[in-house]
Figure 1 (tube, rainbow, N blue to C red):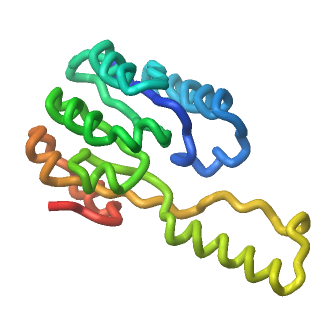
Figure 2 (spheres, rainbow, N blue to C red):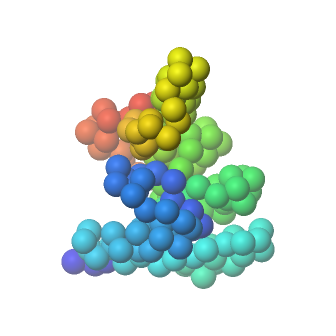
Length: 175
């Protein structure tokens, strides 16, 4: 079986329910790297700290047919999403992005936190504190709702056929 290569970037905020147990940039990146062997996937980290490194990482990544990219949440990546989307779409590299704005901007798909639910959880905490609860006594809660957004137009441009089972799981399908 051929190994797929997935390039991870920067910082992992979600994708896994157990992620809340891990703290710090290094530990989160290491967590993602360690997921690869269990799924017969080679993880190739490509951390970027400057705009020029984004293009360099994408060029070094190559255009092999078995490659895919997981873009992890990071301010630099979010601020330069147009460059990233344009470059990977031109190369027809499948990418999973961390936020729906990437799929809305032409990216293939996003898998990320449902921020409405995150804010709802935060409001519950504020309410409890205003009613007298001590913040130190409140349980720590990890996000528990994630949304899959698929850009079907981009998938069709790539020539990808998205399975109906995956489409059924999507929170939103952009056509």
